[in-house]
Length: 209
Image (cartoon, rainbow, N blue to C red; front, side, top):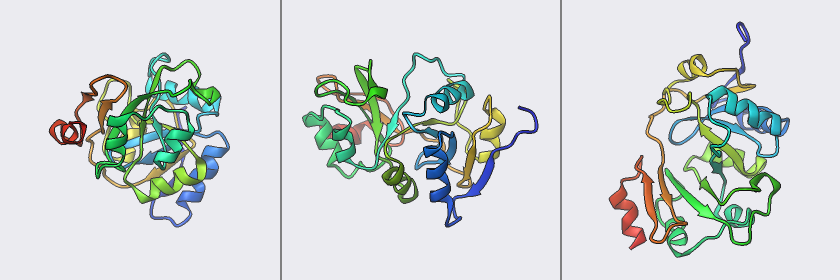
């Protein structure tokens, strides 16, 4: 891997969305800025890219990857069960935003790439650039761009130096904050905040009461 570098594109480049979508649809791994931290993104159906992503992070293969979508309609189309608490959060000012929901499935996964999961973590980001990518490419597997169980660096160069491999495309979004999303498991009754991140637990609970 020494000497191999990804294609670097600035997020400010007018062609950056097209470049990102093309890379994803061709089965590539993209390092990109999100509204929380830098993330690694792949198309869920691109099996080789998914395996490369796991290898880059040193992430245990049995640990499922989170999903990003552009809308609530996308969540429903994937077969997720949206119960009352999840619906209240999805309709709240917290979403789109730094809030991830763990959801079960209404009738079992309708997509082959979700087969075998009892639940999955899904998020609608509050970022126009990323939402544009998601609207064109469709739902993506997106996870923080860091070695497993370590903090995510806040700039592109540090992320690239830490990963165990090279993405096909790296989108430079400058220096980002390094606060992850808050994770709420809405499959449980009552719903439980399993990870406190950018959204305070007290704020989440206001919409779960």
